[in-house]
Length: 219
Image (cartoon, rainbow, N blue to C red; front, side):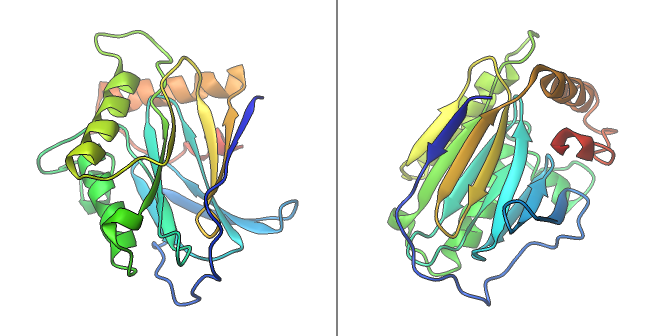
């Protein structure tokens, strides 16, 4: 697999009192990685997670979905979201957590969470990933998600520090908010097909899509 490493500026020690998302949510799975000696927090579609812990790395798998990695470079507090579709007025997808499957709600929630940690808007460090076109359809969902993310940040007057968007390949993203370090791995073909199948299921019936059971995408 090809790897891309994006390193942000160095940060001071993280705050032990930094707020975190509820890891009991089905979209978030936290486990200890003995090889890396860190906790891996794995996000499924519709999830968002923030932390400043130096021993945590946020991981997600992306096909046409987009993930934004946003942090306060001064304190190391930051997080990642994972959204499936560009926007929806109400975010009505069977509950509050479901709203985060839409880009407009996911971006607003993550940006506000980092700003509330004491970060100025112009200091936000923002990196975007995903938006691949893994399959042909009436609309290229990956392109639309990528275009939305760029346009949203432009409207908000926020600069993009780095991005890896579009193309024909799925991605696995590893993000460490405490340092700003990102690793991007291109998916193997068998994993990529699982992502395609899952996304087709979601998009074909948004109301009934069930995110449970998709954890094998991170195996």
